[in-house]
Length: 219
Length: 378
Image (cartoon, rainbow over the protein chains, first blue to last red):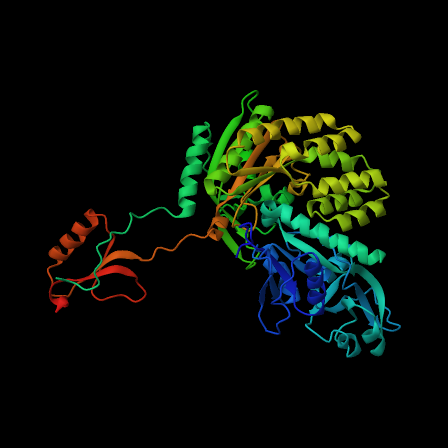
């Protein structure tokens, strides 16, 4: 697919779901609207009306793979995923949306026994391993894929490392944040090789979106 | 004899695959500049890598104990072996190229993979000419791989001296460098703020991180930044080389860019660094630079500069699959005269066709025509 100037469309990987839809709005306002987007189909690929952009809807945790392998020139990925998988990509812009934090949580009143290996349940093994390695703490990672909060309640783990948004789920399960690891938000990432060829177009999009975000912040 | 699946066209002579062609042409290119091939054993003492782990792309190494009890490794890297095997000769630049397999962990599968690497190393006094020659060869190597290519260049001294001028911890400086390499202005802002870097310096660092343009386009801005940090001498040296390179390759399809995300590990690389990209391959196919600091770590007085081309990545280039596996498939029966079959096959081969001879048609073979020999035609 090519635009009216004969250039190939820029491939953009968007995370399925609310975040992706909200970020698509930024691309739409930047002049890359697609009338196919609202037609109610379950299509995974949409093309912008100008022919300048092509969107892929992908699982949020897979966006980095599409970008790192160059199938997508740019994409939107959560900082949690970038820290966990450490893809070799550029991180060009913090979109400031989907703000939350990676944190350590435990049952209220939990006291860690320094003599014992700390049992950590998490979906983010790499982030947890790095965080505790920096503290020189021995840990045992229990990899889980969901309902992480259950682990300390039933004694599967001492603590959990997970994304915390409002903290409601933690409170409802008698858990509390005991340490914050890193703040998180959605980032615009780019493939390094594709950037070498398409830097002008990618930088143009980044500047437009940064401008919109700044207007929103001020307005 | 009957032709069943006819066709008069003869397939073109067997051509080398993309990577075979590139390897052959790169070797010819390097030899035309007087580089000599350096051949080495597949094995190296593990100790060499243990002492220089950070220099390696991956820390994982295949090791085994040799019959004499020494811990050996299958080479994960060529540069260290070349540096170890060469001696300093005052005033003489040793120019070597290699075409070797290395053994590294594949990021995708997490298992070891044999990777073909072609590259060159210059060991001696690294001056303007030797830097320029290596850059010329990197540029020509890229053009050999594919006409649509970009060579990104950097001088590590510019970022290391700017960051070195800050009164900040080593961790904070490393974090600032990481964010520049990631072109990550928001985290650069946070790192600078935590390190107490003043606004003017922060603005310069953002400009450095986001710089991506032809040497002639960025020269003014880069000179201005470097003048503010009193490193105009380094900047002028860098620009003189890259502007000359831009001029030399102006009439080609190669784009020369200045891009500080190209900065290699500053513990080993001390000056010019570069990466080469070709359209259609998702990561850099060429990586190199001047690594005098590695030489010092290995107790050497000489400087060194070189680069590697990662041939395994060439698989990503779309190579059109030939429509047929062979031109002619001859099928014979037990009663056919084997000499007559061999003569027929030879006759067709001499006419330029590829010929496979079988008792029956194999599955999954695509042939341009089928010749049933003798009785099998009935």
